[in-house]
Image (cartoon, rainbow, N blue to C red; front, side):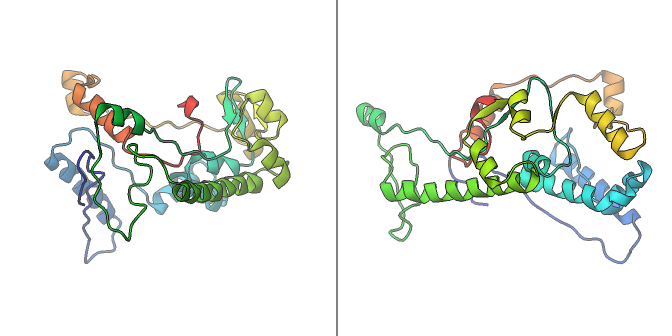
Length: 270
């Protein structure tokens, strides 16, 4: 990866293969190789995510959901690809906490422009680009946006907006497309407003959700939470949070402001 000046490297990638066995124990060795590799690089604390359908199927059998494995696994598969909001839109029942702020159905892209301020301060940006890539510095903060550039981005925003509306329309039986468009104005809603507008089904907390699941499945439901496994070093020397440093704060600032992005969420809620 040819990292540009001022940007952190996004990721590093490597892979390895297991040859000569079909034993599932080889998958365990894969996890151990990843562990040893991360430790060799110098990482002391990290999480290895395992995506194995056999493990998931075994978990579903344990909680007596094997007959609904297709729907559950499909939702898990989509979770990382399209995010929890879109997965929730296709859920059978959507709960909102009493203090929930939701809605904000829409797409936004924003960027700061310092052209006038840079001119007064004598700051100029030097750009070298091919004549065949006139849009390469689109949304540069040091020059005014051209009408054709705005039109290009507007088309993308409109397309993403239509996809958002399609997801909500497909997932909410109580709303037709006109009904979705009526609430898809970028406006935000309280939990009561969202229920009245059929964006959510009920208002309640975790206990209400568990009761609904128990009634729907006719069995007891336990909430499983992910917790960090305590290591030997934690037991011997105690576990403590890593204090924030100037370097880590600067890293978050640089990666968070690395460029404009198309966003589905309400920025005031983050």
